[in-house]
Length: 131
Image (cartoon, rainbow, N blue to C red; front, top):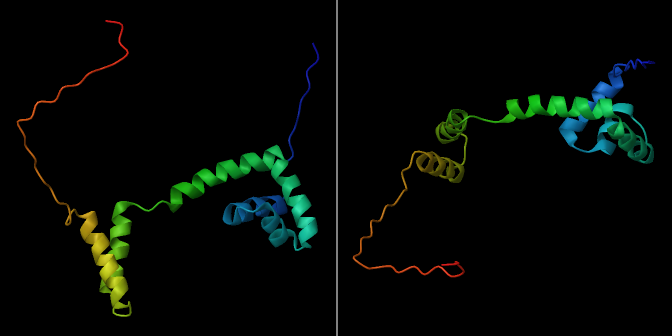
């Protein structure tokens, strides 16, 4: 039985830079142009070609997972951000008010509860049964 051994070449430094640039811009043409310093027409054709390369596509997927995890703020970080806006002396009053509103809402300050009770009878008829 014949076996074929396929050895994949690692990505070169420019291809790795393209991957990073693509993750930032989400635009293959712009990423290629930024890395290879070429004309727009060349970047348009070659950016699409690089995206079609399975190795590059896989590298983008792998790196996006890492980027997405690091870009998501926790609730605590968001509240700290809003608090910093409220406490910053340089922040305009309107921005402070909005940030304080977000802080209050996140703490449940504006929740209104209304209890309704009734002695009404509700009849439900279900159509389309085989009974």
